Image (cartoon, rainbow, N blue to C red; front, side):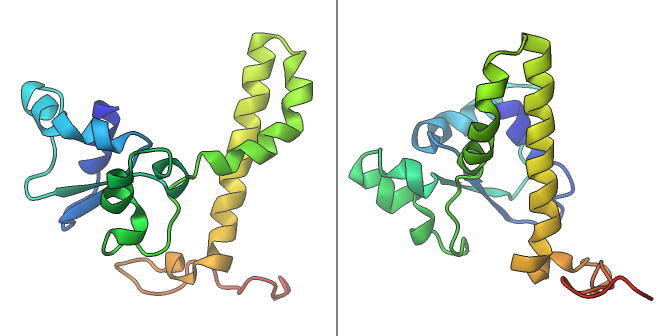
Length: 156
């Protein structure tokens, strides 16, 4: 987890001064993060990067009451309205294929689950423009990536 976070924070983050991380056990994970990074030659966090720990709204209710006030996205300035539970939203589509996957051998089951997860990610990506038009802007050239609006005709 430390390595993945370190790599993500160091990839094209010039100019970012803070990062909000959602993790189900962030109240414990984040306690010694700086110590683990300092002790490892393979981990680094950009200088001046402020890491703000958060816990998804579904999981934070299973923690102590003090965790809710400290780690719920409702109380963290700048997070907007986000639940922080992206993985859990994938369970419903996986439940549809789970009866078929139960009877498969391990390699086939892995392929089917990978295909399903890739499809879910692709569908989320193409639907972003419908719910978040601001995602369509490129910072260097503030113009829409797609020429058509959702629902418009493809005829030229």
